[in-house]
Image (cartoon, rainbow, N blue to C red):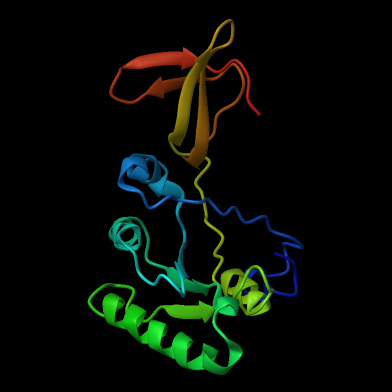
Length: 191
């Protein structure tokens, strides 16, 4: 995000990197989504205008209600609808989505019609995302709390954690406590 879109963030940032994480809606992969829920600031629900709301769409909405307070619905592939019928179809699908969301905390969310393939509505989409980015404040003096996204072992290196620091700080040669195991381990390297 550059200064053109991120005015609400103040002048201390010329650019800000925003990470978009694709969270699959299939039930077998929802465990992965929940594992990374601590770092979700905003949910972007992409709905194919031709297919409409699918089973996995509903599953994602449930996860969204549990993990975040900010939802943006992207109505994609509008270029597949003939231009003469496009506005009516967008309005129809938007009404269905609004009805679905009416009993959720996302009842007032914005719906952006667009086409990634034809570059329709992308400028508005980027603007809405940019204007909803909020900088998190993090207490670096408190206890080190790390939301683990992935954990795996590498022979000769040890256990590798990837994720997001939620509070506190850590440095190479520092010690971390691993919750629920009562283990303490030395940090050998960081990237």
